[in-house]
Length: 178
Ligand code: HEC
Image (tube, rainbow, N blue to C red; front, side, top):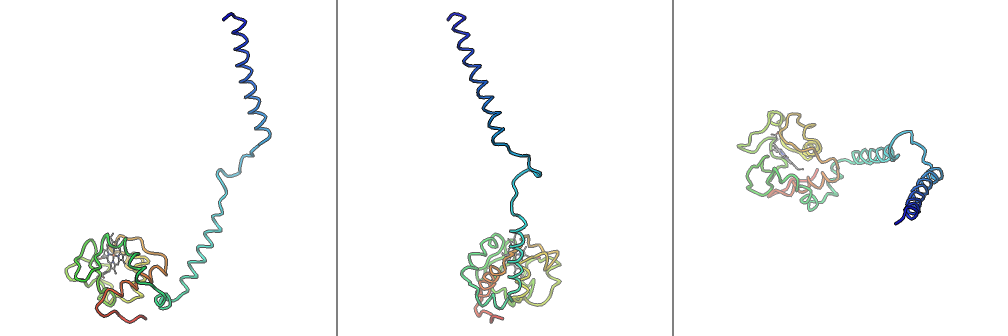
């Protein structure tokens, strides 16, 4: 290859690079993106949050007996899957991390023999009603601040009603619905 040939090739390469740079500058000028005031994309956060909040408060407005009347124990049985990490629901079941839950509706609160309950739950007194179970499952710490039940709570009222319907069915003679 003589030096003239080399110069032609080098010139072609440089020319191409220059052309690409020019193209970059040109396209930047055409498709100019202004720097956004806030980095990232504007998502309609406020809107969804307020819609969710409205739905939640609309739900809270439905009284529990009404939710229970529409509740489905079969769905509840599927929803208690996370609870089975700690609880046995079968008749005659033993305690795991938490006490056995067969016949829990109307059973004395913290009443499973031999289970080491937290003082917080022991101090409640009385028996589990649909209402108190609903509060406890929605927010265990809200119901009994020192509870040992490490579960965040089921926030959906209709789902809780399904769970309650299932818990109610775990009995030789299910308690009447409120
Ligand atoms: C991480 C383990 C864990 C999970 C998950 C869990 N629990 Fe518990 N549960 C416990 C423990 C521990 C206690 C005892 C609480 C105490 O003594 O304060 C308890 C107590 C209870 C009680 C009161 C029992 C009694 O005899 O008074 C009910 C009712 C209950 N759980 C229902 C549920 C339901 C329903 C779910 C699922 C939605 C669930 N738990 C999920 C650990 C768990």
